[in-house]
Amino acid sequence: MGTELTYAMVVELLPAYALGALESEEMEAVDAYLEEQHTLLARLERLDIATAQLAQAAPAAPMSPQIKTRLMTQVRAEGGSTTSASPVVSPIASSAVSSGNPLLGGGRQGRTILGQPVHTRPIQPPLPVQPPLSIQRPRRFDFGWLAAAALAAMALFIVWIDIGTQTQLRQLQNELVNRDTQLAELRQQQIFFTNPSQIVTLVGTGESNARGLFYQYNEEAFLVLHGLEPLPATQTYQLWLIPTEGTPASAAIFAVQSADESHQQVKLPANALTYNAVGISIEPSGGSLTPTMEKIVLLGEKA
Image 1: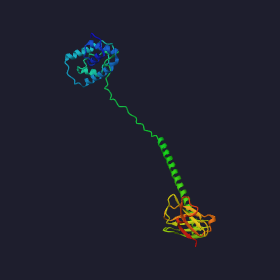
Image 2 (image 1 turned 60 degrees about the vertical axis):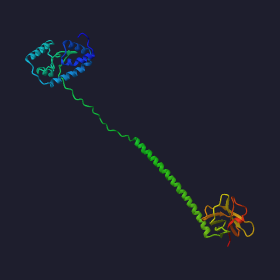
Image 3 (image 1 turned 135 degrees about the horizontal axis):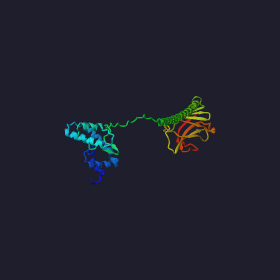
Image 4 (image 1 turned 60 degrees about the horizontal axis):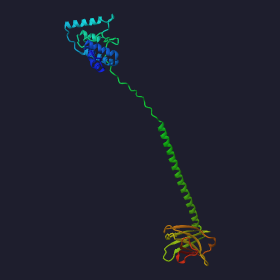
């Protein structure tokens, strides 16, 4: 060929080269390119394999005696031009020649590339490519975070139980204190009711329907009142111990929360234990020095 072959030109000529269908000048040019550029050798090998497989698959056609004689003469001539050692001919190529298959016309038979004769080894069909086996390793389960979460949940549960227990304990303690107080008051009241030193019945004055009982035990008294209305913040109820002669003595000031029954326990002044009557009046907030007579709502005399 007049021009030097390029990569694209060799790629285009390679199928015909594998079949030996090129002119001698073209075959030599491709041989020279392949000896210098090895990048296309793998493609040439695949073409050789495909050519051999095609030769096996092609039906045998009868060959005329003239063609057979000429073909055998060419094979002997090319074999004699090589070294004294006879090259080993590929079984596939030999079969194709003996059967008269024209696909392997002998154009490349006996040629060498990089010092290796073409079709000197049996061409094995490509092995099927097996996908790589993926090894499934057992997945290890990390119990570390699970144990930490369990410990945290247990700690929270213990704290919650402890807080709940402490709350219940405080509630029980408060209930016990309240019950002890109530029992002490009941015991004290029992003394007033069972063994009083003085009892005075209180009745309402004027239009008041209030009533009450005054129980005295030594220097203490216990009031049981009914019908007294709650007062505004500017007023208060005041208990008076009224002697036969002299000024009434103030014993206590108190408030009521409801018109229903209310209880009041008071400490009596020592200088007012000699009295003749007991009265309750409405006074300004803080109490008065002397009772407002027109504001007395409950009054009772000693029996």
